[in-house]
Image 1: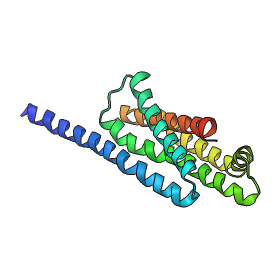
Image 2 (image 1 turned 60 degrees about the vertical axis):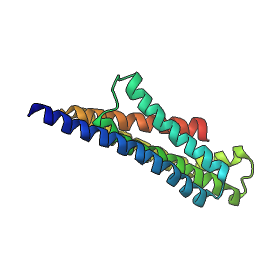
Image 3 (image 1 turned 135 degrees about the vertical axis):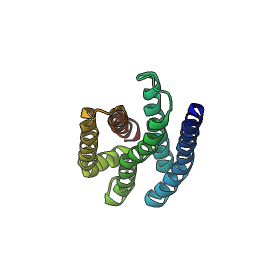
Image 4 (image 1 turned 90 degrees about the vertical axis):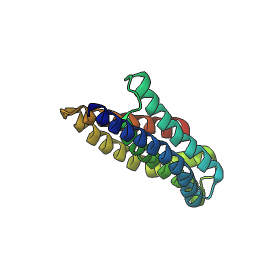
Length: 168
């Protein structure tokens, strides 16, 4: 029956959305735990998790407000990827920010400068290569790959903005 196929797709979409929210519910506490263990600083860990959550919400908000996409199958699949990309830069900078104290940087400004000087080029190069790999998918014919390309590049842009503008 035709209706059976529609209900099968509905089940798939609802399961993917459920897994997106489950992934968020698992990723946030796990990234908080990893940040606590790596930085040994609860304040930096809270700021970092807040930055990651803000990046994810901004990307999903961009999908809805700018692109007028509903939260569907493609967005649910990409949502988990968005979480991973948004954690990447923040974790690197949070770790080196806390390590700066052992290298003589005791004020916030000194630690931020140390973090950017020692990890900034690495994070910037990672952002360029990831955004470049996402941008290549803009040339694909399938709409799913266009969505993935847009989500990857927007995630990298928001991650870069949040780690430079909010976190550091």
